[in-house]
Length: 231
Ligand SMILES: Nc1nc2c(ncn2[C@@H]2O[C@H](COP(=O)(O)OP(=O)(O)OP(=O)(O)O)[C@@H](O)[C@H]2O)c(=O)[nH]1
Ligand SMILES: [Mg+2]
Image (tube, rainbow, N blue to C red; front, top):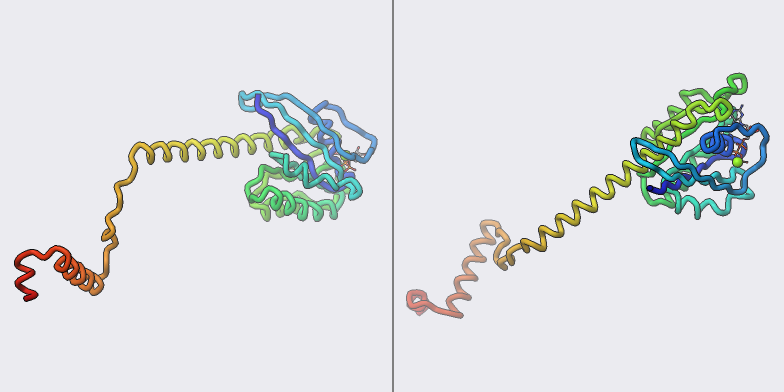
């Protein structure tokens, strides 16, 4: 069974724990208890493959974010969560994503953007289009509006990030296989040693080159006729 390490990131109170617990345990947590760090495991079959998910639910509030760098390093896929009722929570994600890309040293990191609390229509300050705009700015990162309360799109968001990890791993192992094949071929048929005169000279240079070649050949191993010409 393959291991998939997923990290849930976002500002305080946006619903990271509620979304995670809803996905893992199928229950909705009404109360708010700020997280320091919680880890969950869930086994699930995706596209016929058994997957062992390790989900890290992280702290949103600043006092608890010191460990962020470490868990970003170890994560394979990321859920970036904001709340549609909190404009700042979306702004905070911009720097969080930057941090993820910087630490991973890659532009290609499995990731989904989540606008949570979409059931709170009356308190909504961010539209679907606001989320779509950010997803486009990020190079079409998959975007879901979710409700942890009603379990809307929660499973889809997690499954999406696992599929992205699978695709990335498949691409990496295909690249490795190709490189290995190329190396094998190289070892089996080593390239012929290049002649020192293999470079194609331009016409003037070619003439000079030919002349100097001739004269040095003459000096080193004069043939009869050339000997006659010099004399
Ligand atoms: N109406 C509604 N409330 C939600 C939803 N998701 C979370 N909440 C509520 O929002 C509050 C905060 O949710 P949490 O899941 O604890 O938020 P968090 O992002 O984990 O917060 P930190 O751990 O402090 O970073 C709780 O009272 C939740 O019940 C949702 O989809 N809809
Ligand atoms: Mg939490």
